Image (cartoon, rainbow, N blue to C red; front, side):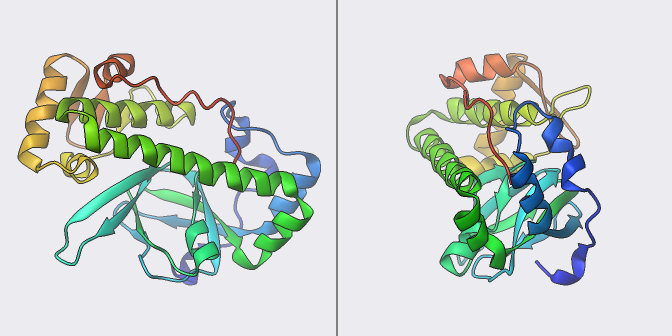
Length: 249
């Protein structure tokens, strides 16, 4: 992610809109002061922008402030596997900070704004604010838990259950962080779903039609409208996230 796209800080951490969402835990006064110093600015990108590239090194960490993105890997012939989706409050770039380079790429699904943090100050976070260090550990552990569920879905669920699980998962996560307006619209295409579930686009289309026939979803030009999130979870035999209040940086 190029530094030239980074803008001066626009949203003071004290006025961060994510703090008003009950899904996220509150900072202590000292934590909020540190995070305010840790943040160097904001970065806004358009839908379709490749934010970080596999194999790249970054001097920064990023927290999603607004919008949607996804993590993915490519094979040499261009085949893509989408690993997970990124929403407000999610941390981006930690892998590159800890391991030296990114092992996956990140692309914006919608216009996205990121809070930008200096990687060099990460050590201060762990030494001076162990509660924030624990939060980073929690975030990494939660990502592992989600990937476990995704792997279970790809390995053992039927195509119909896989699609229902993915849409229920995205619906529940997005609802928790207030990403929906009047309707629950997921800004994804059928190709995104195929690349997440490891299905052909033809098989994906047939599977999604079955969910639409059950009045669980409806497709439109710019995404998928979720009509019944609980019904999708039932089809997938999925109990939901049930993570309670979660931290963010």
